[in-house]
Amino acid sequence: MPKTIGLVVNLTKPKATEIAKQLIVAIHGCKGQVYIEQEAAIAMGMEQFSLPSGSFQGIVDLIFVLGGDGTLLGAARHFSCYEIPMLGINIGHLGFLSEAEPKDLDDSVQRVLNGDFYLEHRMMIETSVMRSGTCVHRSVGLNDVGIGKGSFARMIQVGIYVDDQFYDEYFGDGLLISTPTGSTAYSLSCGGPIVVPNLQVMVLTPICAHKLVVRPCVIGATQQIRVKVSARHSDFGLTVDGQVGFPLVSGDEVVISKAGCDTILIRWQERAFFSILQEKLRGE
Image 1: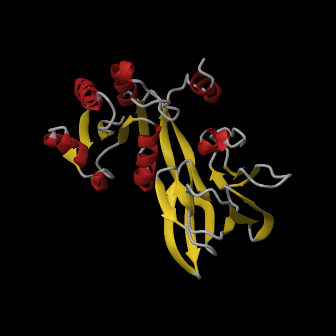
Image 2: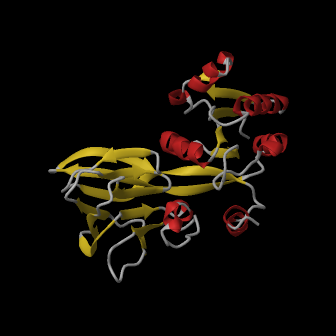
Image 3: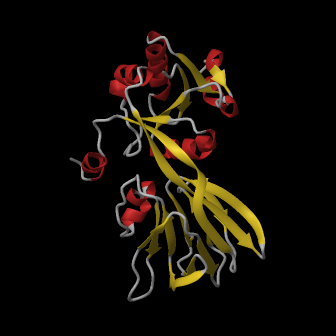
């Protein structure tokens, strides 16, 4: 059974410190051990629990992420290569990726320390930016990769290749490449399909394409996507999970493929994907 918990705390959220302290009490009450990511521990005046995030591997069994979806996305990118399961505790707005709420802290801790959960593997995607034959940027993401124009109102041109076979080309605001997890995020707003999270696929969703016939496309996770980007202006770039940005220049090629690591989420047996859709996205 897991006994050592690492805490990642988004201190910009209201009552984050208060809830983190309640969580520590609950973990200790169940005979568990707890560490807090160093920066947050120092900010909260709890240095006795401090542990650098780079030292979590081999010490903590599980990670509790206290924040919203954005906090969990950041933790997923940071910790995915360590293969440490994560439980999201929602103190944000939507909390689509989170499994627990602050009102359920004691129950959540007991369930985790008793092994009353299952692990759900979520595929991630890796992105490389090639410029004149040289890789100038590489990153991984859990939700999506966006290629798009900035605040300047002129379009960009994207040429899309799947396994080096030409797929489509258009002018528009850009292109999204999403994982099943990201299919319920920005891609959904752009008209992309909802994909159940256990599938191994990637979704290509055009953003405001200036073309009569253009549709989202779902491809296998083993395939590689290559996007040639060009524009007559310089205000466009790449975003990963809506959090990591990188400026692009005309002629860049963006290569996207399945990452070599997964995000591992802690889930309760009684919460099904479609019931979460009803609860979070339809307001029911």
